[in-house]
Image 1 (cartoon, rainbow, N blue to C red):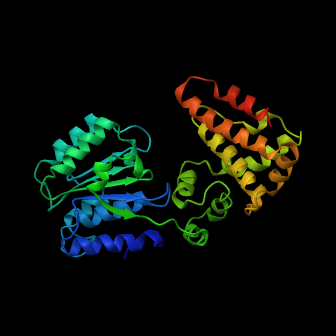
Image 2 (spheres, helix red, strand yellow; image 1 turned 30 degrees about the horizontal axis):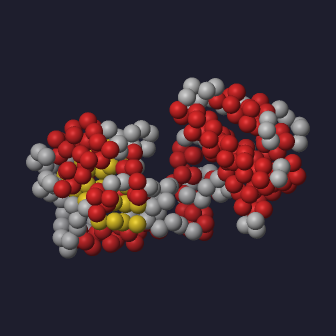
Image 3 (tube, rainbow, N blue to C red; image 1 turned 90 degrees about the horizontal axis):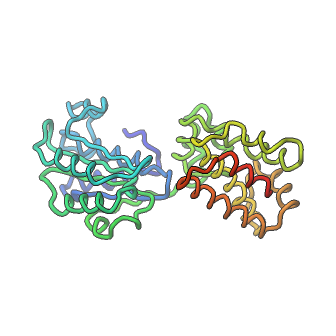
Amino acid sequence: MTTIAHWLIPCLRQVQVLKQTNSLSHALLVTGADGVGQEQLAREIVKDLMCEGAQASACGQCHSCELMRADTHPDFRVLDGEASTIKVDQVRLLVKQINQKPQIGQNKVVLITHAQAMNINAANAVLKALEEPAPRTYFVLTSSQSTSLLPTIRSRCLLVSVPTPTVDDVKQWLLQFPDHQELSSLFWLTIQPFRLLSIQQQGKTKLYAGLPEQLNTMLQGAAAVSDVLKGLDSNNIGDYCNGLAAILHQCICHSTGAPLDGALHAIYSTLITRLSIQSLMLRYQALQKLKSDLKKTNLNPIIQLTHELNQW
């Protein structure tokens, strides 16, 4: 019995039926909003494909399943584009490896996560592999921006669309984690479950959780800008920008009638007193531009974000 998030199970079952009836495409594209679980679903699909049994789901007992559990299967390859661009040399090496016969079991599987990170040359190399697939070889791609992929790649893949879970779905799923209450308090930032889990795994929960109160204290004159930005460096500037932008976005939406998360009630009252809606939108746009500029240049993040907060 699978233990994956419950909103992913229908998608997994559909793929398993296709596998069992020998109707499965040699290429699958798993898509959905960022953080809804594409990667977890894709890895469950991969386990099923690598299993040596004829049943729909992985048996968990054969040699291939044991190797997959140990992350040492020689016929399984992964390219991850989450942190950096996927380049053509990486794809060419991978294709060369999978063109060989399976060392164990029956199938070979390539998993490309965050496939939108492929540059054009890498994408064309993947397209060529999809057009001339090696026998018993499957490609599984994941993306939260599938429209940015080459149309010819999309057309050669079976599309698996992951639904976005409801807030209640996410709350139920979070109950399995010790810090579920703290994670639930970040719904003003995101309700995408695997983004919340990633924040926890990176040890950034407290950074985000304390931001609304710290910002409110600063705007009321009881703290300096430096207190809000304590701990800021080039590695987490994106987190600060994301958090501040999320606060502004939620406040702007609330001003038009949308509900507001309880964690932002105090900061909303302060912001709406100090700034007009137009000013809030300008500050939101400025944060997005700052985040983009910091990726392209060597600007000092502390100086830049200090300047931005002084405009509030």
